[in-house]
Amino acid sequence: MAFVSFRAEGRSSYGIARPDGVFDLGGRIGSTLPDLRSLLTAQSLGLLAPLQEPTTTDYASGEFTYLPILPNPSKIICVGLNYEEHRLETHRPVATHPTLFTRWADTLTGHNTPMILPSNSSSFDFEGELAVIIGKPGYHVPEDRALELVAGYSLFNDGSIRDWQLHNSQYTPGKNFPATAGFGPELVTPQEAGALPQKAIQTRLNGELVQSGHLGDMIFSIPRILAYITAFTPLAPGDVIATGTPGGVGFKREPPLFMRHGDTVTISIDGIGSLTNAIQQAGSN
Picture 1 (cartoon, rainbow, N blue to C red):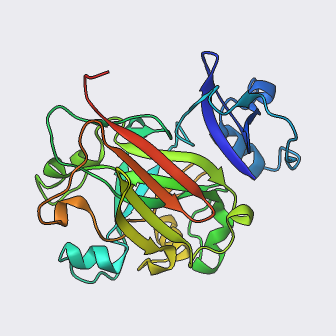
Picture 2: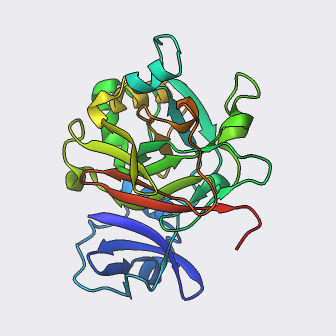
């Protein structure tokens, strides 16, 4: 099963992805569970009967606009330098613990909606990533039980404003311009996704392959990441963990390769889907 958050007929909702569109859960239970985050919370508390795969579609493809899978996560935690090829291209030392930074919810944008190139930068870089979406609360969770927290997986483009990121040693400014991170299109459950390590992750800019790797290439595995994060902060349903990007990022190329107005970037992961965003200059239509 896979879930989407979307906008149709002037309202925001969420539902179950269908081959030809979406089944609108929000239209049925939105008065008590208004968004996907609240649905995940209710499921974690055992307040809902198991959802059944629908046989009907409320909105056909093209009749709705994708929102970020979780438009309102409480926490977005990103892992940096989590693929060896990327660590090497950035000339960073081997680390004992994951490199973490945070994003804010207004940095997110959905599938087939623009990622915004800010007016005060021309260094907009792509970073294709697997996103882990939390489905159960957890604090001080051991590594061998960490996957029990996972509601599902999605795709993430950790769009980076490199000149602002490199103003100092911290990442926050370059990672938090509005609508710079693509997130979606679907939350795919672990059962639907299957085993992750052999799945390919690829990024294409205007159809050209610019990043390629496998999820099994991560330096810190998903259980290790979740155990480390929950050692210092609780996670809750609807929180998002972006797990890092393979090598090939634009600012380490010669010459550098950045996303420009009118470009299209697509991230794909086997069994999880494809996330596409056009690049739009701030202030343009």
